[in-house]
Image (tube, rainbow, N blue to C red; front, top):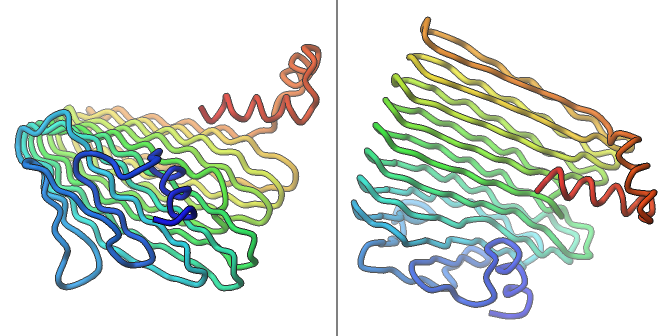
Length: 305
């Protein structure tokens, strides 16, 4: 890997070098490196770009890294990755995409990730998006995550997009069987004229299934953010959606949560709040010696932590 690729890898996957365990590193549309283990297999698709990640039942204390790196200006990439998580497994999956664009052309990555999580399995899924470069070309990412959770399965999703992405539309879909649970935590910050849209829809089909969706975002400059969430309670279930946004400068934020209860025992809640940084918070920090800009940054960092 060259220095650009190494920096992107650190930003999106927290890695300073090739990781241990199972991994698939994709760079500019090609396989850069791959490793499998006795319990985790990674197989290239034959009908389209992408991979199948197959995790054996009962696999625990193992992780999979599947970062995507784009360092060629104007390169546009689309992948289809399917995850098959065996019954009773408990694993961590680290994904994400980093773009380095020093040209004038648009660089783009669209990733469609589909999870088939078997009975009683647990998955922690971490996805980070990052963009950099001193060119005029745009960086665009449009991730889709589709989650099928069987009885008693659990998935925790943590998605982060803080810097360098000009436009993104994130689509997340989920369907949950009896006793399954889904936790989603999203962090977004937009600058300048950037645009970010989040579109969640979850079907709570089984009794005792649950979803907890928390989105925190900061919109600066003239950027725009849109948040849409739909929770359909089709059984005796619990659903919670929370969207909190800090708006600054000339930005625009829209939040549109929607709940539908199709069962008398569905318990569904949504919360949405959009507002500027409170003046008293700034004053308190500035009395401790911080400048106004430093105080703003500290508040934002704490909010997105």
